Length: 375
Image (cartoon, rainbow, N blue to C red):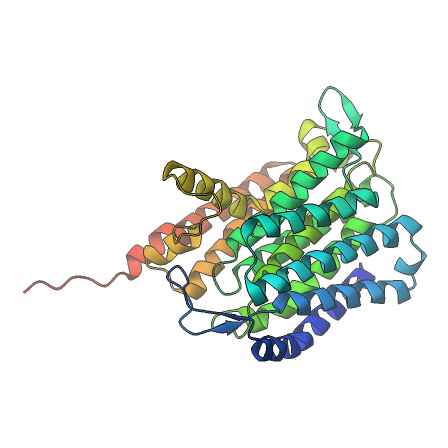
């Protein structure tokens, strides 16, 4: 655990420092977010935050090569994490081009498919699925490739869709990375596997890169991650989940003093990446339905995302971001709690967390709304 913390810290420090240089490079090259109708920022903000986070990810993985325990891990750990980093660099380059010259949606989608295909060609893909009543279902190459591309491209676009307020996407992915790290680490310990695994390593580096970026990106933001950052974060998060599938012949956890296996436990390695991003995924689905019903293209931007609605009901930018972080944390860590632990305390914690988050979301704006004075 200590070596993973070192990876997290190194990725965070390097990401934080590189943001200064990335911001200057964006200003000099004209990669700046102009103020548009649907935006909530009032002044132009430079892009290239994704480049800084890519540097943090690379530094974290490089540090892992030098640490006593992680450096002696199985060869596939650095093989898989290295190819995820390379695919991240590819999609980050596509995002940088978009920040500079504004690529059309189909061109960006093509870049996403190429990056996902690169992972598949280098054996970073879904190997099997744990299904209730069936057990471990090994996928053939075609099934594995198609499902992998769908998962990676879907995750990249989900993160991109939620990137609408200062610090929102970075915080959601940071929360998701920490939750997925805890899940994969505990799952490995319970199943008697080595704790030096690719999923945990990638999540530690990813979480650190996001943590280093957030001080520059929280309201009022001095730099945006841009598409280079949102697509990078989505690819690495989905890539970490891909490396976990097929690693365990059986999936079990300790419950009530013993080791047991359940439908939820079997499905969690597949469901958890989706659970982590449920907030942006819901936002993505609602946006597609909303635009389709209007006769618009599904990628046509608007100002009706979940974060826009939070602003409309009376939240400030900072509070809207913190509330969406709370929802993301409730769903992500709630999924981990239910999957790994049992008992009344788990459900009490989830109930209290849900009540608190709902109160802060819907009741707080009403309590703070100024009273109308008659006259």
